[in-house]
Every structure is written in structure tokens, then in C-alpha cells.
Image (cartoon, rainbow, N blue to C red; front, side, top):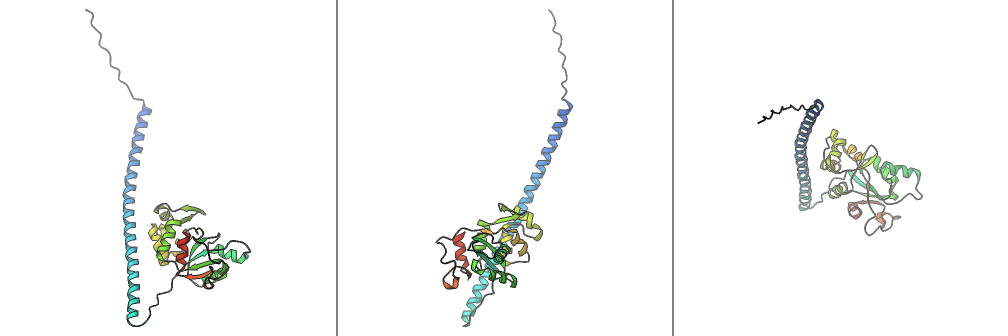
Length: 248
């Protein structure tokens, strides 16, 4: 009988370029996984801080409301009246278009960020802004917004102004990238800064694009008459909230 010759086992060598590519890909996957783990841990910490800040703001708002009610009740029990502090914030809404518009009025409206019909913007109360509003008063209506209206405006109609572009505020990262340097990291921080007219109000208000509202449900009454004469333009004080709710 013929004996079979033993087969020689040839060692298969992996090409050097394949070995290098495999090592490189493994290193990249490990780096990506490490960055992802670190990013998730950082996001978790940031979310916890945002929730903590939001709860602190809510407690602050509740304490302010309770203090107002207590002061009103105390003044009533003593036979007097309690007059709350004047608002430091005004919400201005443009109610008329560009027909027969004076160039100075047009420029003032631009300074107030009211370039289009039904635009709305926040304004800090001071001598300069009051003079500006008086100059354009027949074309706008304004008043003192409530906390709920400010929150609804920013949540529902809020857009950011970044490099001259109108960017939707889809997450807190948009806010943190632009306002993190002044201590505003989330939308609740932004709302609190606007409501309280804090030290960084200028940066926060500049970050917001003018609110684009729709025509009010039920329409206007008479745009060419002032509010005190059963019209629309002028100071509505707290009644601005009813109008804005119909325009959101």
C-alpha cells in the first residue's frame, strides 16, 4: 500500500496594512466610546443642575406671589391699600404696518426690534426707552407682561439670533453656547433673567429674536384710536396679557 504524504501546513500571514487598519479602527472605536461616556455623564450632571435651578426659580416665584398676597391682606386689614412696585419690564407689540410711516418712526421701530407687523419685543423700563415708545406710540400697543405670558412667548415663539440668523431654540445647548459666559445655561435661566430684569438682561434680550405673532383672535377694535378711547394703540398695562394670549 502506498502511504499518503503528510500535507504541509502553510502559515497564513495577515497583510501588514490590514493589521495596522484593524489596530487603528479599534483605537478610534475606544476613543469614540470614551468620549460618548464622558459626554453622557456631563449631560446628566448638567440636566440635574438645570432641574435644580428650575425648582429654585419656582420656589422664588411662589414666595413672591405669597408675599404680594400677604401684603395686600395686611394693608386691607389695616384699612389701607397696598401698591405693588412698578414693573421694570414692558412688552411692546407692533399693530400697524409701513404705510405713511415717518422715517424717524421707522428707525425707532427698528431699534425696538419691531420691523414687521405683529412683532413683539421686551423692553427694560428707563427714561430712554419710554421716550422711544412715546415716539412710536400710535403704531404699537404695550403693557406689563405676566410671568406666564413671558414663559409662553419664549417656549412657543422663542427664536435665537445667532450670527444674524433666526435659529429655533430646540435645546438648552443653543442657549448655553451663546449665554453660558454670563451664567445663563438653560431656557429656565433665560426666562428668569427676563422676568426679573436681572443684571444680564441686555445679553438675554439681545439673544432673543423679535417674537412673530399672528393677528389676534377676534381681531382689533380700532387701530387708529388709543386704548383709553376704546381703540388699540397705547398703554394697556396688565391688559396686554389678554391681547398677547390671543396672538400666540
